Length: 208
Image (cartoon, rainbow, N blue to C red; front, side, top):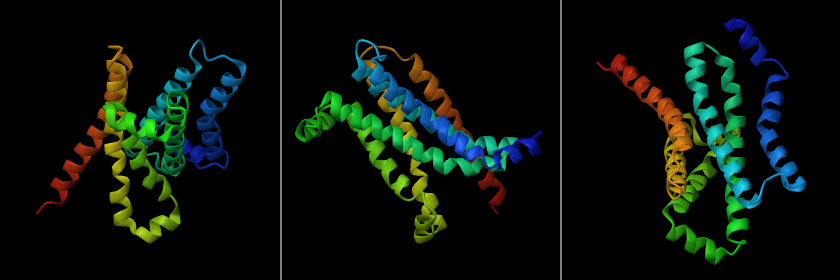
């Protein structure tokens, strides 16, 4: 079964299929906006949806290494870069929707809002930290930085995951609705906890 799954993941259609699947939420949002299917507050629906898909894809990206290790699906690694770029794509759309619908692209108002509201600041920092990861996700950047420095840089994704959950928590605190926050926090906490335990075990193995 494992061999068959790896063969399927290595097939010529696997990556294009994953690309299309990750793009479908954006296609749906564009269609829904044109067809007026987003409800009474389409601006809020677009902001929430792009934020939700950023978190969902972040969970998927962080789940690749545990799944690859525990299930022996080494072929999953070939999807990580593409899905990571999709995280940045949806995060950028989320920031774009906020800047447009909430702030009307007024730069002064955006700066004031970022400094005034902590959850906006946290979300903005997360997008800023995602930017160098997206810009260095290509082979040329990896070679230029060197493997070790590239890995250290891309460990920022762990901090970004924490910031994303905090942003979501503060955003929902105004409505006192934490059900979805708890789900994402549990998933991301489990994925980060798995990495921490793995690092501790490896340090024990290599310690003199």
